[in-house]
Length: 305
Image (tube, rainbow, N blue to C red; front, top):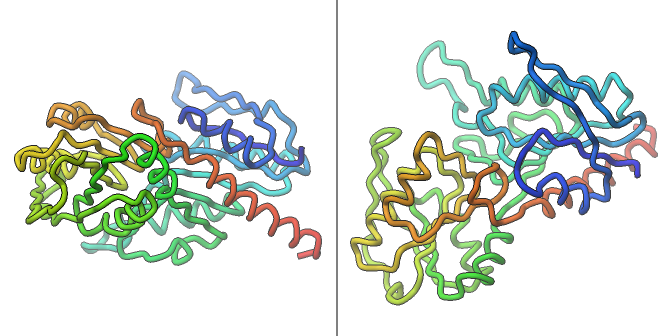
């Protein structure tokens, strides 16, 4: 095979799924830390003349960045024809403007750094704020893959009596898409955030939810305060215990335990970030995006671009 996937991610089944759907070999690399904290990295699979994908989900990115960039540089040095980054979770999307004088706009800094090392980027449902497209900050082709079709398939298979809940206005785009695909009713709530750990949720009226299983959908859970307050609000309204579905299960500190303690029936996540709740595989659509890029890349090479 002329394609190869190296993994710096521990998300269960992700590397194998991408390699299978991308029709690629799984490469081996060795990485460890020296006693002083520096990174040692060695590619154990030849890459000369091959199209290479580095898989690295970038939650908690600061400790992952050095191995990632060293691996990309080593691939170039050892003759890889092209190097793509599959980052199911893309970090540093929060700080997209300077709110106070002197602040670093880290989303743009991070984009410039990755654009220098990689030929292509594919990610899953990045948490965009004032940036409407990754093309605004990334100078290499970037593809956004949606987790909504995979989430809808899971709901259809396991929660046929679902009533889909979006905890805030930002979740509306995902909720409406999943609800239509899964053919279940839905509602979007209102959220007010007073701080990182201070959130209030209001429901208003939720017609048609009686007897159905609430399924709360959110793209990212870090402190999980939004999900926790939504679970409490629904239980107070007398609904069944809600299922929570998360695209990016960051769950900082004891957030996951707090969510369960709040009364969630269960927590299900996409394997964009490695977590014990991973149950929805996103490897196929990532691989499909890579196949599209690889075909376009081959045409450019064949045309002598």
